[in-house]
Length: 64
Image (cartoon, rainbow, N blue to C red; front, side, top):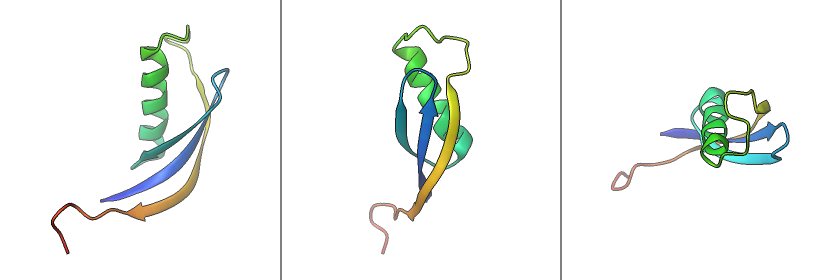
């Protein structure tokens, strides 16, 4: 499975580094986490940018 490391910049909450499969998924994970922590951004656009950093192929356990 191929996953990438993304840097997700947010408005007012800093920068997060996320391992995900797509830009949208990385942004969604940060948004969900911030909403779960109730930083007062519920229903607002929190993510300002998502930058690709690197990609890595991860082998499933038990595969050679």
